[in-house]
Length: 280
Length: 311
Image (cartoon, rainbow over all chains, first blue to last red; front, side, top):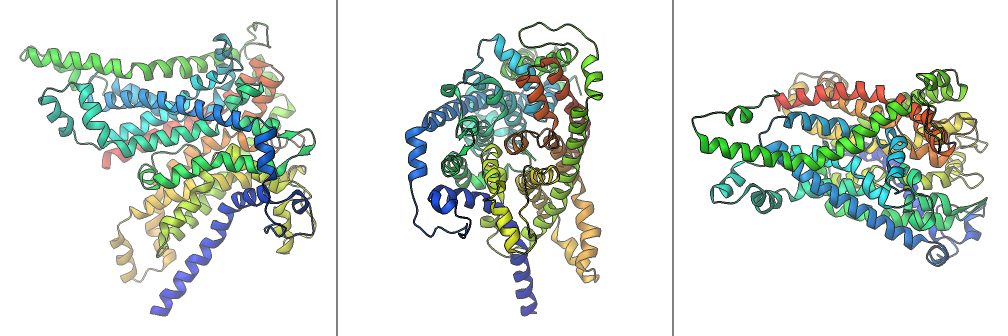
């Protein structure tokens, strides 16, 4: 009996191994390429997964000294933070009001946010570029701060509706009996309890902003206005010369904040998981 | 459903104080949803109507479009590149969603059977879904690039192939290559969602089946599949929308080539509408995503509502 269980465990791990390798391979490859000398990278006889001739920082140095990488990084942080915080504020107010306050049409608004949450960003980039043009925001990253909420707000609102429903009404009702206004009760009583849910949605929204490609590609074109996704793709690949080492270094550095955020918030995040799909 | 109890209460004359308070509450409610509603109307509903109108014009950059009825749609349906794109999009979506569903179930079952370390494994398995696609696809690009393609190196070492594959320049392999990346990216979402469904199945069901002498295959068919069906359908429909609307993977790896064999609706719309600036025609192309979205959201909404009722 014990042996059978041992064999079963072994089979489970053996079955998982290829999935884990598949999941990790591109990231491992990114890291290895970014640290290897060009001589070793472009040596077809070498074993590609190992670094035998010492690690080098030259690809990172090139990235920081000869490319606008840091500028794009700054733009990406600014756009993602502004778009996510703005969206989160809008979404918290809307979700709370839909769940707790009775007014005609609240069901309609809930269904509306759900339907728009299903709208992929690729459906609307053509007319949105026209809207952005009319607002004279073409080739400005402010266009992104304006348009990213179109996918963050529906997602966050939908998730928070589900989250606020799980918080007992009595909490804020007792605060309101003691004389607190609705908004004060929301800020002082409900939000502190809802921290995991709000954090999850903020994190999801932030990740979507950080990684969006089609809007910055459609709305920005000059180097100082670019964000990471577009900058790496359009300017780190020069003509036929590929700086693979630097490109991989850049992709890795751009992925790190997202990976860190998720590793800190995994437990929060998994609780909001099933409802929080953002891509499939 | 439309007239809620709260709205009726405000008119109730018996307790005027409460009534007044309720209507003040309703006003606050409207005020609180107003920013979200404004955003939905101005930046989603209005642009959507705009793209409906634009698709009926011959708008070209700098010139106001003339109304040409269904001209763009007629043109597109006779256009070889568009037809190819439509075939690509359907093929890409059907194959990728199918593979993700099957592998997703396998991976979920493995994670479910995991004796320990499930948190660590879950974290690692999630990486491809968590890291933005626009960044991780850069690594895939490099992994596919000959003659340094590490994918080829592995396949040759394993003896699967004897000649290097031209991943992004051979039409058939380019299609397979983009599907592999899509599966890689989406699989964690399928697996973790299915896992959540599995965990929700009462253990007693499996125990009862075991005492009745049912083997793992029978248990899978008689217990797991039927109970997982609602989650399975939601995930498949949701993923169908986002797979057919995919952009990053194709744009980074192939830009729709070779010979338009990997164009999806979104990449062709970007090419036609924003690069070649046939804006009306580009808008028309994106609208082909809409029927898929409409059908899927109808069913998802129904399933989610059904779930709420017994939850």
